[in-house]
Amino acid sequence: MSANVETMVYSNITGRDIPWHGQGVSINHFMTSEEALEYSGLNWDVVSKPIQVCGGKKIEGWTANVRSSDGSVLGVVGKRYRIVQNRDAFGFVDGIIGEGAAAYDTAGSLNGGKTVWMLVKLDQTDLVGDACDNYLCFANTHDGSGSVKVCITPIRVVCNNTLNAALTSTSRIIRMRHTTNVDKRIDEAREVLGLTARYQVELAEFAEAMAKKKLEDIQLRTILNSIFDPKVKKPTDLQKRNAEECKQAFYVCYAAPDIAKFQGTAWGAINAMSDLVGHSLPHRQTKTYDEMNWGRIMDGHTLFDQMVAAVR
Image (tube, rainbow, N blue to C red; front, side, top):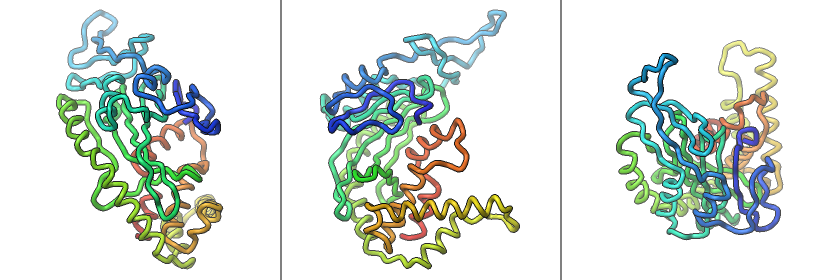
């Protein structure tokens, strides 16, 4: 994500809570929405501007989303698109956690303002003896490329894994399209996200069940083969080598001190895969990798979902 961070603020309470990319404004406490809005550099509006061709003729049905602070064009959108301003986004989150609550942990802008996010700290959950800090993340795009997304994500304190488990009854993510009814959907989302306590309880129950579920090494190897082996009849040597490297990288994560105590269980395999997809480098470090990984954290990663489905 480092190449895509434009502006950012983060709470650095212990003095060691610095993001891995090293960017952003450091604040020594959890912030209110007003503080987070100001320090994150998100105190600007998106203005809808008409589009015209060189001859001066207006292009009907399309407008440009322009940033008020510098006039940069964030995207071109259709006539049904409705803007969700940064300040309104903070107001939405305040409606969930309580207005004036000092709970904002990070907030910022990615890709020149095209994507913005804010993260607030919720109550902790105990996951089989590990303290788990739960967070609510609000992400929005101003370029017309995606919907408003609000998700609940638990991050293990020890290794900062992102565990986006697909649970059975409680959805961890809500999407709202930028259309005429977006304001209504936000009101509905406030009610749905009031069920975060239910999600936390179900996650704790899921973790407990997975920690008790034995997973023999031969079973784990079979699962890894099904996930990583090339899905072609005649794989190339490069494909075979990449698959083996992925498996070895998984076992490195599986042996990490905070995960090793769960070796031989489904919970250990789930955490190792979470660590692998969330923090290990890809085979090809492309320019868009960090941006795509941010999306995977919001939406859930295919490899992680496959591991959860295989062991549950």
